[in-house]
Length: 326
Image 1: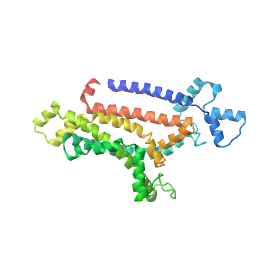
Image 2: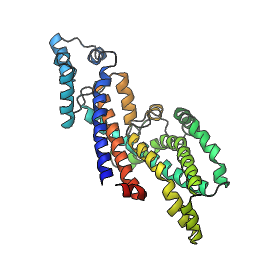
Image 3: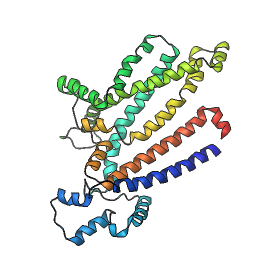
Image 4: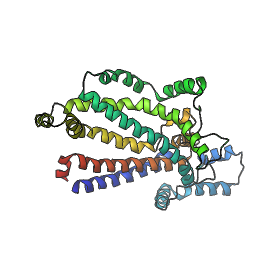
C-alpha cells in the first residue's frame, strides 16, 4: 500500500509539472495566433474588439503571465479548455470529444492486437529457440524498421489503388450520415482496416523481440528448472513460470503504449486523412491553436499517467517482490 501511495504522490507532482509546461511552452512559440485568426477570415476589427479576442482566448498581455496561469488552472478544474482557433468558434472540449473516439477505436484496437499477437509469438519464439517462428524474427524486425508512412503508402498503392479492396483515405463514406446503422459501421470498419494494418505490421515486431529475449533469459532461471523437475506440464511451466515473469517489461511498455494511444499515430492519420486526434493536433500546431494544443497535450499527459498507475497496480499483482515492499 505504501508503494502505491508513493507512486500516486509522484504522479500528482508529475501531472502538475506537465500542466505547467503545457501552459508555458505554446506561449514561447513565435507568432500571434489572434492575428493569424483574423488573417484567416480576412477580418478588420477595432482595437477593443481585438483585445476582447485576446481576453477570450486567455492571451491578455495586460493581465500578465501569472494571472493567465492562474486562470488557466481555474478553467482546467472546471473542464473549460477554451475555444479553438482552427475550428473557431467550436470549444476545444467538443473538438477533442469528436476526434478522440476515432483514435481510441483505431489506434487502441491496433495496439491491443499487436501486443497480444507479439507477446504470444515472443513467448513461443523464446521458449522454442531455433523453430521456424524464431527464424522469422528478421522479417518482422525489417517491417518495424520501415517508417510508418512508407508502409502506409505501400498499403494504399497495393490494396486501395491497385486491388481497390479498401478506401484510401477518410474515416467513413462521405455519402453516409454518421449513425449506428449497419451501412455506416461497415464503412467505418472498411476505412479503418488499412490504417490498423499499418500500425500492427510496424509495431508487432517490437513486442515479439522484447518478449522473446526475456523468455530466453528467464528460461535458465532456477525456478523454471525446479518447475521442470516437479514434472509440471510444459504449457504450465511456459506460461505460469517463465512467461509470467518475462512479461513484466512488456506490461510496462504496454502501459506507455496505452497512454500514447490518445495521441494517435500522427503520420498514419495524416497519410490516410483519418479524423483522429493526431490529425487534429497536427492542424492545431500549424495554426498556432494554443487552446487546442493545450487540451490535446493535457489529455495525452493524463492518459499516460493513468496508464502508468494501472501498470504499477498490475506489477504488484504479478511480482510478489513488489507486494512485499508495499
